[in-house]
Image (cartoon, rainbow, N blue to C red; front, side, top):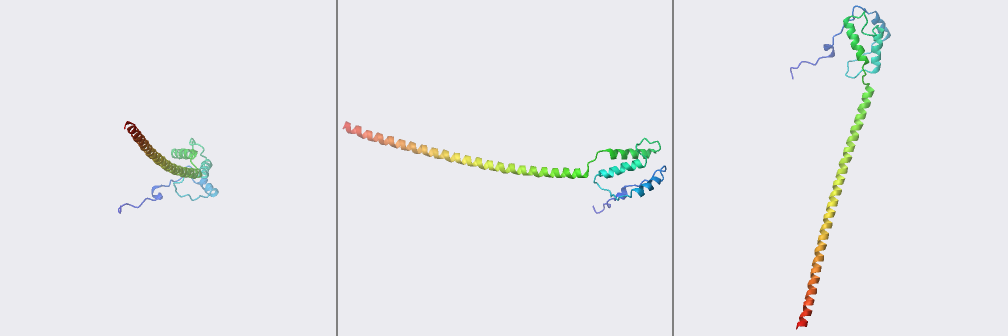
Length: 174
């Protein structure tokens, strides 16, 4: 990493082209006086609609309404085609991108909130299910204990009945 060359600047990559010999600067000078250059730095940001409209009007000022102009060189035709195609494509406006980003952020927050609510609801249902399980288990234990108590009480009463009957029969036999 220590031997890596320094990163390239935009000026290292871009080459400036001179105007074609057919249009020697008379239109360019008029344009410069009418429309002073705005300093637009190279940016990954998309062009705004006003910049695209400015490019289209500049093409019309230069007399290039289509690339089929007979006075244009091959290079000029190609550049005109590229520029016309670039400016005619529907690009997304930066305000639209900001609005989309805000919508995505809101939807993401909404999704996170819904996921949290679902998790809380699941925990609540799990707790309620555990409560029902413990309650039913307690009721079953109570019922079994009650049944055993009533069985033993019933058995004891039968035993005492049979014992008393046994005594009564013995007294009759004796």
